[in-house]
Image: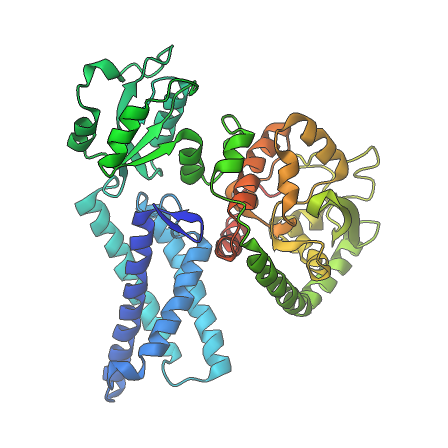
Length: 461
């Protein structure tokens, strides 16, 4: 994987994204040549429209990122890829039509955008067909060796067996650590030269997955592997990178302290984040005010009570604040205290069910963003009662309050809406990853991927 601004991106996805961008530029050029030939004009040199083509390709490419074209199944499901490509390229072309209407550029016409859309979809579907046909779904998977044969090694095997994973485990080495769970593991004593064994298998990474590391870390073996140019990783760091979350079952305070993350350089990033929040919240409030007012009236007409819902939540450093949303539940929904949302929750009104599904109820929260109580991206703000209960059951829960809560977040786009302690535990793992690896780049990824969650609702309640 490549680490870009502290966020891991698989090599295969990065290469595919760069290839797609080049194909988008090519599609734009082919569309221009076709249209010029149809109306009988000279197409002119490429450099006259190169900047416009590159910019238009970037708009469509960002739409592809937003819709989830480069998700876990990017190289492994043609059906998945085709559906997302069709939606994302169509959205990108619509955005370019709007930009063309405002800017009135002569670099491209709507007819060329129409042709370019079909060229782009066709070329990218063919591109993915060729990749799967000639390279196969495992072509870009990294070859990993696991030192260990216990339950941790078994967890890695289960992760590696998933079709969307980016690595393949080529060998397990039993290190005399106790009970063996992975039966096919080779005993360490059966291997004379572990460094040469790693070379012969073409291993690119070795993961230390011992059950008990105290006095059992094979330092000589790890040093030999390292000097062969093979990357060595510990179990918790490997899981963090591959899953995009911090594994609470294996992490401990010392790992959080000594592992990479929680950088002091985030002061500048936080300043940039706040400037973005102010500008974006002002624009969004002005742009969506008519929508908020329309649905406020619909909420009032649909059920008795106020149009807006005001509730205390826990914010940065555990400080309480009042969050404002469009009311989606009946007014007596929490007369007996706050409760987890349920599937097909009877407390949700008819209008409330719709505005929750498309996230319109979240729009008034931009006022909290403007005031600095929230950010656009961050952990979901919880009610104080839930926070007290969750801090008793979940380790490191308080650490999620080291960053501002957000309207959307890394946990929200990666895990369906949680309504239990176990769901909260899983979302906490994603929240800790965000708090640990926060950068403006990760915020951009979250904001773009939020479009995917809105288009394909995943567990909204």
